[in-house]
Amino acid sequence: MHNLFENIRDSLVFNKFMIDELICVEYSCPVDDEHVGIYTQSDYLIHVLSGKKTWKTIEGEWVMEAGQTLFVKKGAAIVTQYFEDDFCMLGFFLPDDIIRTSLKETIDCVPIGNLSNVHQFTATKLPSKEYIEHFIQSMFPYFKDQKDPPEPLLRLKLKELLINIIYHSDNDLLVSYLKTVTLNSEPSLTHIMETNFSFNLKLDEYAKLCHRSLSTFKRDFFNHYNTTPGKWLLNKRLEHAARLILKDTLNITQIAFDSGFEDVSHFSRVFKKKFGVTPSSFSKRMTS
Image (cartoon, rainbow, N blue to C red; front, side):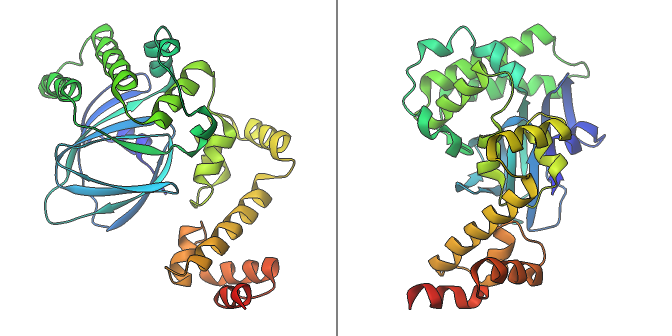
């Protein structure tokens, strides 16, 4: 999978400006592949200027077209590219410290109704609002200027945007998620793992999503789950694959890929070892 944050940060192609881990980018899609796996260790907001793309996570799928805005939690997604029109967007990668400093004085004033299910949040399409349009329009001049905008001004604009989001969003999970970011010094390991286990990421990439070194990630993981990340991921992916098989809407190859396996033969072997039957025979056994 591609690290979208680092690819954009290190690229000389995109029109962008950066302050520490904050990246604002005008992104024109250069890829030829229809489906691309991406991940990023920071939350990000995209506003589509032209074209069409789909973001798919374990919790849902969002078709994004011109004029629409999507907030995506740090983690992985499968992005589907449509080729009818050139895709262009403005992207804003929001490090946790930007969210914390922007919302620390405000978040307690906002009623939170869905903290118990906040781990399920992965992304949401933001409703069309004047405050979003004003923010996007106010950012255009900075992408055309040869100098980066003053840091205090950029932070102020992002603070205004985030405060407007928590006050005007109809998505309780989004607001609850932003509250957890504001109140905690590092991402929840369980929230990251429960929404990203089905993506074929390496352990060091999971550690990066959790904002931990690999050794700290392994230690914290074992302390919480009482097993190793490798064993947990294999079991979690196999259980997810079994649920997909019972839905009977995808073929075995697609189920393997959607569950985090790159090799279908390997998937079949480990599936049979766990469940005693091949994936193709599993649904027959469960329904007989």
